[in-house]
Length: 96
Image (cartoon, rainbow, N blue to C red; front, top):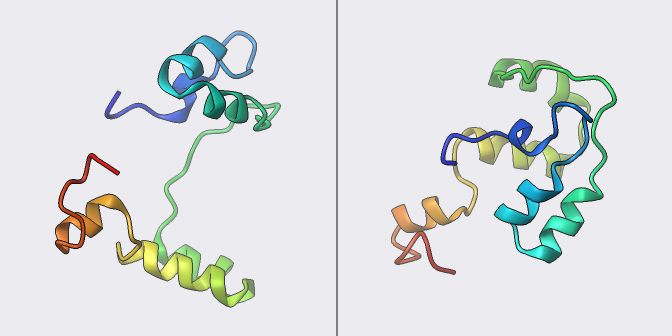
């Protein structure tokens, strides 16, 4: 599951969330919330967007807090468990 993507959680035949898969991966409350997230009617392929595209098209018209989020995520400075562990702020990347 380490390299799994969201499309693994969607039933290919119906195009809806695979309830059994969601309930097997998430706790019940989170699975119920996930099932409420709408899925697109037509399948589209994911595309990796480069930093240049973000800066040129998306960011100039966006609010400052979104620009800050994009900037921090591009520079891997968001306070994720992995980053907090690398900076020795958090001792164990697995435990909360």
